Length: 103
Image 1 (cartoon, one colour):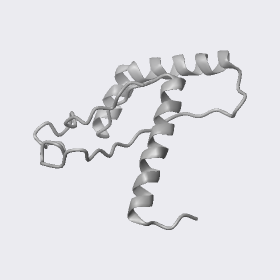
Image 2 (cartoon, rainbow, N blue to C red):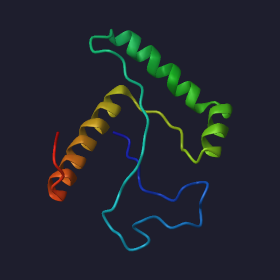
Image 3 (cartoon, rainbow, N blue to C red):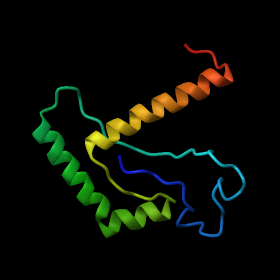
Image 4 (cartoon, one colour):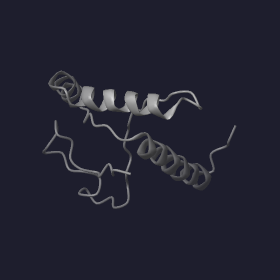
């Protein structure tokens, strides 16, 4: 999985990260992903992933993303699956530790 290293926001280069501010281990990032129904043929997933990766590289998308304070970059479907799995585990621990009631 390609890491989403906590780094300074490109549109706020003078604002320190949480770690730089004395909060080691604090990492909260947001991300967006594209999902398809289970059982979608692998060749369709690959074609869609390639198209999204190319779109994210376009100057228009990069410009729009930067203006919105986002760092648009793609990842493979396997990497996205790993990210989702990792985030579910991470936030499940936070919920348990905080004593948040599960519904």
